[in-house]
Length: 344
Image (cartoon, rainbow, N blue to C red; front, side):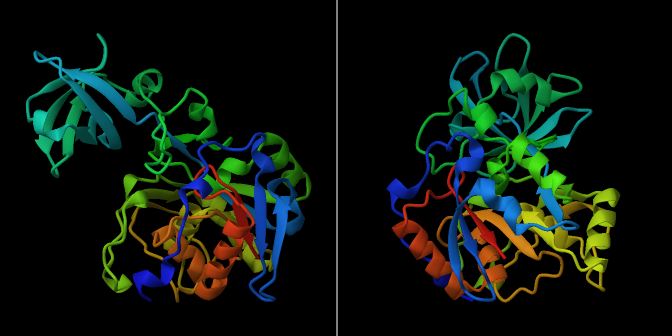
């Protein structure tokens, strides 16, 4: 497969800047892989495509308020510090990106208020730095009030207070992502209740989504692309429930490309799921053979993105690209705050 196979024209007007309210009123395009039929529904209808005994797998990662603005000691220069990942909890050491990078050197301290500051202890890339915060214990708690929601770069507006809740799934529990697992943004507590009442078990996995999710693929030959590593965990209880469903020929329905990658990373030789945790750089693109995922819920993704490639691996490239064309024509809203797709 070539990078150009996943190219399409995405008009700026099709990119959703705000989510619909309530969340489950987003449009839902339903793709049937077998019949190649395309249906148009609302996300609130999603339970119609699930049966008693099926398992719904969600990514319960939580987006933290990763964008901080501080002042450099002595000069008072304004510095943006974008938190990427925690490297050491006890010592409060983090990987970050700083802007403007030319002003930030090893040994510099950046103050966010009179209680929170960090010191630069290493350079990693041209804009990357390793910093140590002064807050022992939970840095997440300290930045929750000070930080801003890390909206994706294609949402061309400043974060608003409402984004703190909107850019978070209702089941988010484990701090660690700088981007939301967007397919999950459409669920409401009421819809989750409806699904559970139908006899569908909802089980969590974790995959902390990093900035790499927005990084463009820069090689035409996809075999040469390397994904950024992201932390994931498939708990023992979740793998037990999933394996039981596989054994009894029920569907494993997966919410989002991140949850799909976590599961497909944890697959055993006989196509079951093993409990595991660690770092994954698994790159799924056509003609990948999915071992665990039977049905996939996802959003509409950027042209030439690794997320679109995963969807094309699941539902066949030509069919997916045809549905994207139709979605644009039918005024579906694209990307993180946009509408959804269910692939049967």
